[in-house]
Length: 234
Image (cartoon, rainbow, N blue to C red; front, side, top):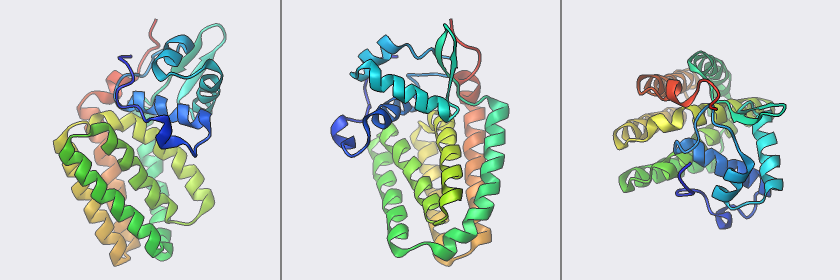
């Protein structure tokens, strides 16, 4: 780990319970490549980097373990467990099934306020891409997809899809850390918004699935999935 550059400040997260803020800090370290699959989550090192005490850090690690992102072993501590190529492919496949169900609900149930939020995220991502703010872009990219999920207004589907989307985000975020890839993703987001406006659920499901699949292909081609996962480091 190379310090806390790019970490969200506590002031930006005041309304979030503290362990969840620590989860977000750890997520940022993963998205920037400072934490990699197989890394041990040593409490002392992480507490020093994040500037937090060990109690909320332990709670955050438990939350990550519950989401399938951390393995804990007796006498071995916690190890970051990002999806390998096989599991990443399965995540994409399952997310595709969920998009197929949610897309119709999104176009039927989305409110004007929800559409406006999605559009704001898209506009902000354009600005962040131009500014070269890679981490900022990645975080809003995650919110863009979460906002579409929320627009299905189906609480059960949202809960399932949000967990999968988080794992996909952490697995693929590093592969999107070039301006060219972010610009391509932004263009796809614009097409997705146009389809939502048109109210075409079938096309939306197809576009979202293709978008997720391309993120997987990029991560695989750039070696992110292989290099960011793998055997536990000693």
